Length: 317
Image (tube, rainbow, N blue to C red):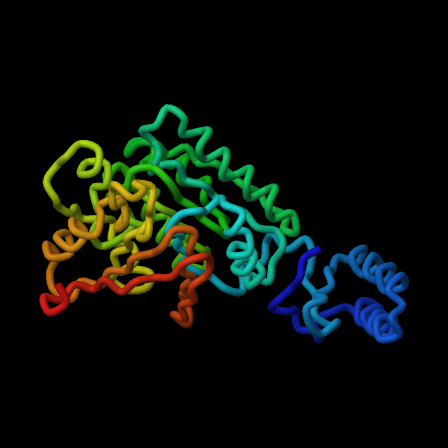
């Protein structure tokens, strides 16, 4: 059952629902929880879900797929977007929408070069559907694996009406290359500016940044330290920003520093010195999310880690 954190105004409830809510409150005050559950069922039959985290007059209306979300966010994961620890993070954001029927568009571009791209994003879809049963989720995997795909009017039209847009793992440079100057990217920005929520994880956080780090090219291929221009979407939605996910990564063990998104601290400091002074940069720990309210610009951190202000200054390096 959905636990509503942002209630529907009781003044907008039908008289019968208000009557049942009052009876349910009386039953709960008397600790008659069997009757309370029966009344909850009657309320649900009228199309409303009861919030048991606060005032019993707080409910969420069912069948609200045509309702605009009450909030829209930029939700950035350093990693762990389908880990058990992320369920409460999604729930926190989704409850704030004050809406149960949610349509999610998963865009595959960051992993478009991988033979198993369908499986990667299929796993994300399955995670969302099984981990958040309180919500009526419709999840559409949009296979936009190339620049040509991202320029297809038929494919772009599938995003219409999306409450949530999610891009995740893969290669940040591949994502930036194949989304740049495409109708799909324009549509994403348009939707988020008009109330949709954008969720980015891992590679996608870098691709949408002002600058993007060529992780594979440096870490796997051995190219010289450098940056490439990212899609710079954060500037249009919130503020100029570059995100470094996997900031506290330890996959290399004691013998290899893989922090700073696999670059290691030493190379990370060198990379920062290559950027213009005062470039806003945030390091985002693994299994950690930064939630930004795109109306109030309020920022909160959730998960196992924290964020790190890496804004480059010659006095700090």
